[in-house]
Amino acid sequence: MLRAERGISRRQLADALGVHYQTVGYLERGEFSPSLHLALRLSRYFEVPVEVIFSLDPFPRLGAPASSPNGAGSA
Image (cartoon, rainbow, N blue to C red; front, side, top):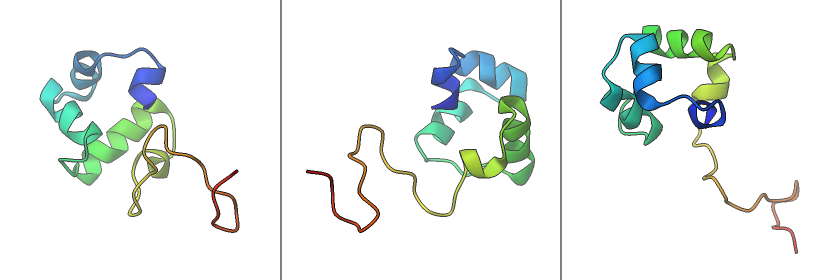
């Protein structure tokens, strides 16, 4: 999401991080868990805390409806 929001191509990000562009795709699809070093480099590149990019809990899918604090969906 961060990459797309900022108009950065997979290849541009890969070049900046020193990885293959397919690695960026694997990361985005959740098919690859990065090393701590790569996770920290991504965090530095986007200037956000690493927790903004990675979490032990799955992030909600894009376009998924937000639920209210009591767990019920909005009507």
